[in-house]
Image (cartoon, rainbow, N blue to C red):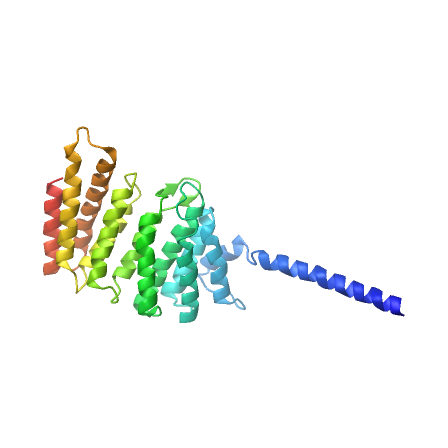
Length: 306
């Protein structure tokens, strides 16, 4: 009887280990396949019955690092943005969990260039812009978290070394443009201070001064949008803007001191000029005010000197 009992115990323990191993493997495997997400998009982003929205969001978040453009962009980012901004699907606590994860992702393998690690950083920045848009509708961050996110976005704009815009096989990379989207949403927030305006403008100048390429996928337009959002604020700091523009002009004009011009200075001149041209158009699309008209005049004079 003791031998039979022992054998029964061993069998039970073996089954326990086997099922436990299978459960662990199941936990590691994505519970939903690509057709599931495609069907959800086709069904106007409706969450199927018996599915937990936040669990789905966490699963989608894991795809932000994928080199597959459909999983990363068409499905993960798009679905998350619809749920966060349009549907306002998640609680404040859940939104803060996402914000914490995506903010930490901005530092993941930072400094690498030419590798797939950029997707996690870049698309986390883009998803953070969706959270910042949600914050404008139903605030959940609070002042301390808002300031931390703003600081993280500014630092990331300068620290990202991978400036690729698009890859024919892997799709959009666009780290600079995605960070600009995040900064634009944060710049529209009432928590932004006048000092922050100058800090953001300087961060944009620094991005162009350290870029080793002329952006060709609309990055200048997206950064111009950040400036136009700042210029539209009721507390717009005109003096800080004029100082920033004067410094930009002085730096860009120095390119002609050398003949032929040095490549880094010429690259910055081109990026700055494209950004200022985009800024004029964006300012014209916004409701005019005495401050915005002054900005337009100043930018036009700057462009005339280029």
